[in-house]
Length: 225
Image (spheres, helix red, strand yellow):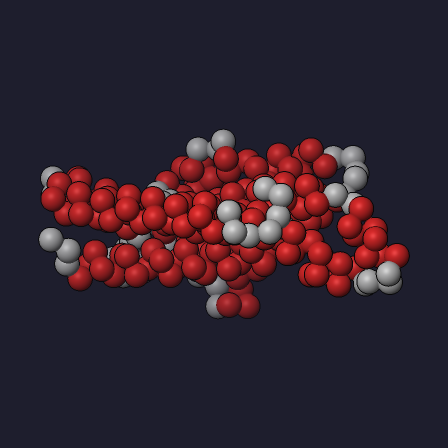
């Protein structure tokens, strides 16, 4: 029931999810820390921008990313050192779109975890002359482990299940931008329900097992979430 094209789409999907989740953790963790502790006017605006993909239709976000990353888009000047050509309909473009679309799924649980830690443990460490980076890595990160695991899992799973954004910015190029969600759509369009059932069922089982493991692991991890 599964051919080489479906297998390639699966490999591409999980590669995209792994790369995007790594980037999301590297970018989202300091952003979540900053949002959890910063006090400034306009903070609600920043939080609204970060959370916008939660309510914005994926096709809308995908459309503007397609325009921005295209050959003649407003970000084309940033792509000139890379040879130009734009990043629309490329795997790199999919990564950018996935990071932006899944950002709130990583930032929000991580921010909540950092907020629940409170300031007292950090202030106590400061009185012992612990540097800011020491306080972050030895106190904040261990205490926020549950939030980090939850955010990473949600970001990974959300990337695996993307459809609208990846279709708009990546198109449907086999072996390059065709991920599992698009492959399932193609099978349904071709009335190949058997193959669609196999891929959909596999993603259903994967999603359940992933969430089950997260809940089980979080019971054993330190933290207050």
